[in-house]
Length: 114
Image (tube, rainbow, N blue to C red; front, side, top):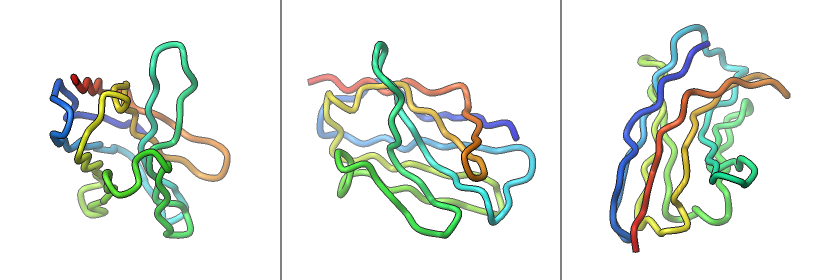
């Protein structure tokens, strides 16, 4: 599976962005899909996931502001980010995998100015 993320950019605090991830290859019902983010010098963290069991999970820091969605026919998933904060500044990676293994796209930079 190869992933292509897009939609990042520079916004002001309080504004919105929508990230997209297009996948090539097979995404089965057993795959989780989602978004992670990483700030330079810090560990990558989970932002949002569709789990393989069909649940949706969000990092506490983004609950109520971010929404993950998917279009299975297009093998594409999205991250709608509202009320962005400067602390949301990071490189955002889309990811998918099965069990404990996963792949990540090249990342898209989101910068939120105060």
